[in-house]
Amino acid sequence: MRNVRFVGLDVHAESIAVAVAEPDGEVRSLGQIANEPEAVRRLIKKLGAARRLQAAYEAGPTGYVLQRQLSALGVRCEVIAPSLIPVKSGDRVKTDKRDAMKLARCLRAGDLTPVWVPDEAHEALRDLVRARLSAKRDQLRARQRLNKLLLRHGHRVAVGTTAWGSEHMRRLGYLRFENLALQEVERAGERLVRLEQALERVVAATPAAQRALIEALQSLRGVAKVTAITLVAEIGTFTRFAHARQLMGYSGAVPSEHSSGPRTRRGHITKCGNAHVRRVLIEAAWAYRHRPAVGPTLRRRQEAQSEAVKAIAWQAQHRLHARYRHLRARGKVHQQVVTAIGRELLGFIWAIAQQTERQHPQVQPLRQPAA
Image (tube, rainbow, N blue to C red):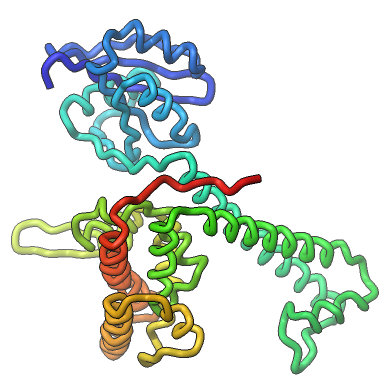
């Protein structure tokens, strides 16, 4: 671009290293500034007209605050995927200054891959979904610790009692041992319930387009409400993917490849993508080991859906179950088969999302529920 200055930013909690790539080819460091709004505003004023600036920094723990501030100032700013930044094999020196200069140089060359930046409300939904996941994992760990404590005291789950059901918890309350572990399990369960209730309120306050997409995705077997919300929260707008294969690559569930000449060699999945999307996909894919069927629960989820969405969901059951049986017959282990099924399931998810988003073209930002 002519007359555009490319700004590379190496962002940390307290400081930002700044470098500029000039249109004539010069790349120079401008030193460091404090990671504060006023310092950023002064920097942009010093660099010149905001419409002639293009900035970039790596995605990381500092989030999207700087990107939103620069966008408000009129500067086009991209958040870059760190794993996709070009790296020289012989480069053994890494400093904040060099990182900022490399970002500015690569931004000018067009070698950087930006990530999708959600708006603040969408990011809040994503944070809530991930908080629920953390609470669920805390609950599982608390239950495991209590199980080990019970085993040391010679206690086991009674025959005919569901583990962690109401009868099981009632029996645990009568046991005579230090019950701090039991209280920890109960607190973890209460926290999980609060987060799920908050998630219900947030989803109820979303625009009709997002709610329609969440409900449509639940037409697929294995995709219940939490899974559908996770997909929408992590992926955002599905129409930004021109093809289903692009969405599969975004999940990191595609095989790696190292081919040269006549030799073609594919390996394990890349995992270069959204780990949360990949996790819920693999969990949902296990449902397709069963024969195609529409049970009462799935039928209720499909009641309000169009015939086109139901047809895609039914086609997914036949296709993915047949694929599962075929791969198992070839001797593939369960984990590999389910990973392959999850990758193909993304294609049907993309098709339903395209169908739904065409019916609701005006996708508005998510709204926060009233306090």
